[in-house]
Image (cartoon, rainbow, N blue to C red):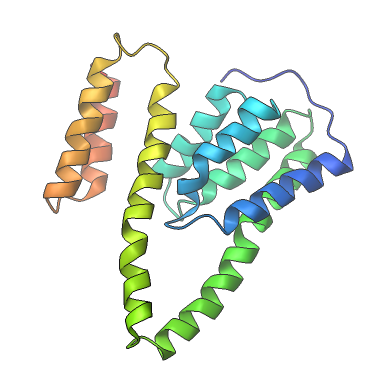
Length: 194
C-alpha cells in the first residue's frame, strides 16, 4: 500500500477531520458508503492525508470483512493517524472519524424513526420514503464510479468494467446474494482474469 509522506496534524486538523465526518453523517442517506466520493475529495485530493491506495484499501478491506460496512470509516481514520507515524494517532483518527460519522446519524435516525413510526399512515411520510430510493441509488453509483475510476487505465481495465456491469445487472434483476458476487469477483481476481 503506497503511503503518503509522514504527516504532522495539529489539534485543529484533528477537529477538522471530526467536523468533516460529522457533516457527512447527515448526508449519508443509504449508509456511510454513499459519502465515499466526498471522503475521497477531502482526504485524498484536498488534504493529502491518504493515498489513493490507502483510500481504496480501506473500503475494500472493510467491505470484505464481517460486520457493519461503516468500518471503512474507522480504517480511514486509522490510516490518517498512522500516516503521522504513531499508533496512538491511529486510534485518535479512528475516534474522530467514527464518532463524527455515527453521532449525528444515530441521533437523527432514532428521533426520525420514532416520529415516522408514530406517523406512518401520513401520505407525506410514505412519499418521503419512496423519494429517497433514487437518491440512494445515485449516491451508490457515484461511489462505484470513484472506486473503479482510480485505475486510470480504462482501456486495459475493460474486464473490470464488464464485471461491474454484470454485477449491477445481476443485483438488479435477480435475487442472488451479493456474497456470491463478491466471491466470484475474488476468484476472478485471484486467477488474474480481472
